[in-house]
Image (spheres, rainbow, N blue to C red):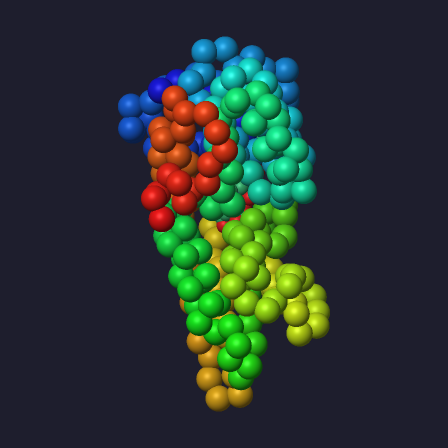
Amino acid sequence: MKIALLGYGKMGKTIEKIATDRGHHIVLRVDKDDTDYELADADVAIDFSVPNAAVSNITKCITKGVPVVSGTTGWLEEYDKVIALCKEKKGAFIYASNYSLGVNLFFELNKKLAKMMNGISDYEVTMEEIHHTQKLDAPSGTAITLAEGIIANSKKEKWSLDQGDATTIPITAKRIENVPGTHSITYSSAVDDIEIKHTAHDRSGFALGAVIAAEWLHGKTGVYTMKDVLGL
Ligand SMILES: NC(=O)C1=CN([C@@H]2O[C@H](COP(=O)(O)OP(=O)(O)OC[C@H]3O[C@@H](n4cnc5c(N)ncnc54)[C@H](OP(=O)(O)O)[C@@H]3O)[C@@H](O)[C@H]2O)C=CC1
Ligand SMILES: O=C(O)C1=N[C@H](C(=O)O)C[C@H](O)C1
């Protein structure tokens, strides 16, 4: 496949290596100063850029009929608008807050655990995410997806970076040099804790998942998630 990389930072460069190893060709690399780019003959675009560029990059791909895999976090207030455009233009689009197989399994485990803990009043849930110091958004997109998984399966109604009331899942976001991404969910009672945790060792799991999603999306139309790609 001919791949356009929208965003050529830490993730863009990791994706380039994995995509090339899998026999794909990178035909475009877009960074901050290349806003007037042409998608030309790209079969698929992969956007790992910055929150304030994601929507215009995705919009351009959909408008030009290029399937787009979006990994950028921090723009989801405009998700419904993007989905509506994709449907109107009969485009192809996937967004995932996290493309790694491990985190997508962790998302399912989190929902099952939330369902199990629902109604057991002895335990209170909290979440912690840790990322590198260059990260622009907090909490992470992955933490938001995990919180949504708990909300859909419990009496919790919202998440917050503050403590909040009994209906709130408190999220602590820590920024520590060189951490690729760690997420943990803890249910605490007076006598014990139950904790589940995912630790990324590097960025290759995110990048491989994004390339697999691009391969899967090529030739399709519609709006999808990693659950579709992985058959979970
Ligand atoms: N869904 C997932 O699995 C994962 C998602 N992410 C998300 O991906 C995004 C990128 O992460 P990461 O690669 O670590 O970040 P980086 O900061 O390393 O890379 C982002 C790149 O985007 C560039 N950029 C800035 N403006 C534009 C623009 N208008 N169009 C295209 N590119 C632009 C930046 O250029 P410059 O440096 O010149 O500003 C930079 O090179 C983040 O939102 C992060 O949260 C990260 C890992 C996994
Ligand atoms: O910015 C990052 O690095 C990451 N961002 C994603 C997120 O916000 O969840 C995924 C991963 O945790 C790494």
